[in-house]
Image (cartoon, rainbow, N blue to C red; front, side, top):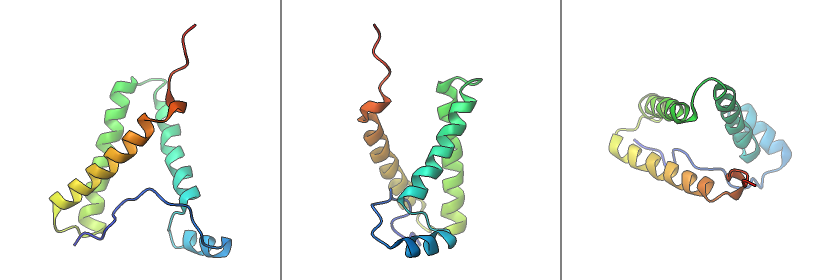
Length: 112
């Protein structure tokens, strides 16, 4: 059974600080914690990029994400319909990738 949504970029949290802290203690990520966790993966990628080509590194990260998501689907969410899970994850990734590609802060510096 697929529990929707499996992964969703967090929306602004309207809970009180006390409620957010309690949620974090139970393993729930609010938007701030979500972004901090994502930044840890980006930091790891940046460190690895000093020795591994970015074109190979991004594929290793994509492979790792696919492997971990398959584990979550099979062992945590009990996703019976694998194709539905795959479709959902692809849509989530597609939207996140489009948002980041539109982010001008990721543009390379202008050459002078």
